Amino acid sequence: AIFERAVGSEHVAVAANLNNLALLLQAQGAYANARPLFERALVIYEKALGKHHPDIANSLSNLALLLHLQGAHAEAMPLFEQTLAIEEANVRTQLSAFTASQRLALTRLARYSLDNWLLVAPQVAQSGHAEALRFRGIVSRAEAAERALARRATEEQRTRLDALQAATRRAAQLANQTPGKAKERAAWQEQYA
Image 1 (spheres, helix red, strand yellow):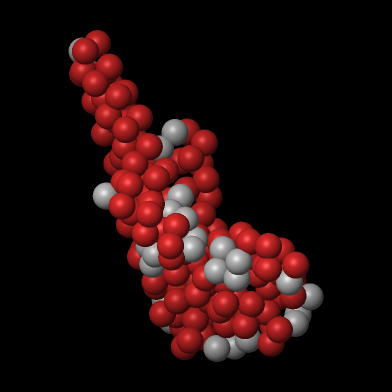
Image 2 (cartoon, helix red, strand yellow):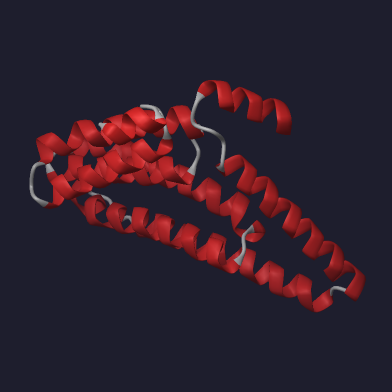
């Protein structure tokens, strides 16, 4: 409560704290207490970051897993599907622009979502493997394309490619660091639009 008053109730750090507390409650078996925290964290993340940010996918996956643990498979499935759609879009659009450590973080998030999906899918008569293979294919194609491009590129092209990748990384960082408060977000959008 003190932290929330200090940074504001709609700050992404509040959402992260709510999410972590919900995970702790879930691990202790207090599912009924964890659900409203996951739901509130999701609302804050969506307001602050938009509906396609990796943190949204993580939050949706956590809520979906909780619903699965409660036996609410029908409620969990659309959340898992939404999670996978967000993860796939992020992997497709951002993977090639990221540094090695950022790629690792993005693929770990996707892996977490896929692991949760594979846990639940058999209980709703799906294997879940098609989704996992699709993600692996996306990552493999991006890596192969980069290797092929690097082999054929001249020194000038490599320099330009490095500059383009740096600019793309900066644009992705700006997109993923949108301010949490509406007033600050409007100023940020004005500055970078």
